[in-house]
Length: 292
Image 1 (cartoon, rainbow, N blue to C red):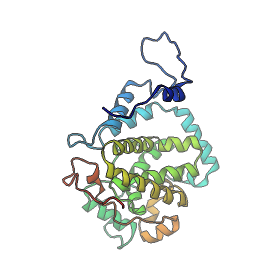
Image 2: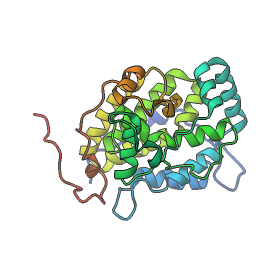
Image 3: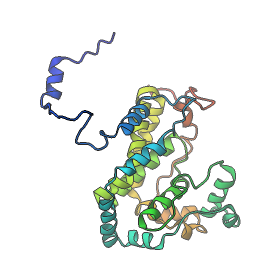
Image 4: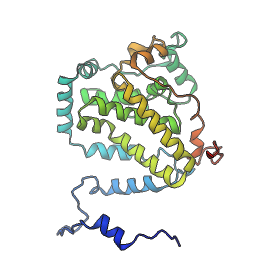
């Protein structure tokens, strides 16, 4: 039995202004469309509170949550925000008008010079076991919104390459944090929130699970969040607006200088998946000693 007891005085302080609102509804109903969605309630509670067990990967049910969040969007308002920001931000307008897709192939990048983005992309596609095309793979680009969906999915791993935030526990959190901060500084708050909606979910569920089950991963989480925020707030503009095809033959170091991407992280997070992914062969092997 825990000695941590929440007393009546504590409840009175935090809960004293709660008002009971009567309803004739036969089912749960609230002022939140998200809380009203039974499927989303079930998924959020499960994904926030479960372990990353070997039977269920950390990435499980991301497509399902993403679909629900998109289905609950006020799309006329989102399109209105797109038009508003196109009028205000020339780079955003150019990005949407050109609709340049980062759907690189192994063949078209095979002759890119060493040190260029194209060479890095080629190595990734040949040797990593991953693919650039990881989400919204069946979307056909027919307007600004579908281009946004398709291109931001295609460019995710390119952002890993350019920022130095690797595809690992620390790197994923850092990249989420960097993008959130960069978009919040650049776009209208409503549009920034939309652009980061799924990222906020990913960050929230990761933070909660680290806090509940994976103490060493939580230390990495906090460091990555901080470093990612620092980098993202210094970017010239959000990386989603970069035409990566124009950069294929450019040295990565030159791209980083142009976009003010610094600092680039070292290899400290390379093995951090083992801190929280229980299907990792080295899960549970500690990485650090506590500070004295």
